[in-house]
Length: 109
Image (tube, rainbow, N blue to C red; front, top):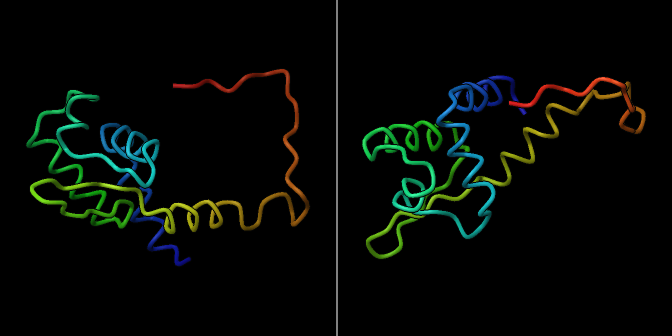
């Protein structure tokens, strides 16, 4: 994967609403979600949601398909897998990545 592709995806996810939208759509997997379903779950105004969905589609993180009168947004699983591989490509100096137990817990937002 080229750095520019990864950067474009990470920049798109670097905004809280877009990250929340993307995570929600990823949870639905291949079933996807319509904008009205996203609005119902996240309470994002329609115009704002349209802007964020456009940014995620432009970053190639989401695929969109028209079904009758509805748009269905799905995660681009191929890109998500590539991003994971890109991040872990040189992990652990080539050795198997076994989680190390630590006494500190990471702060979760």
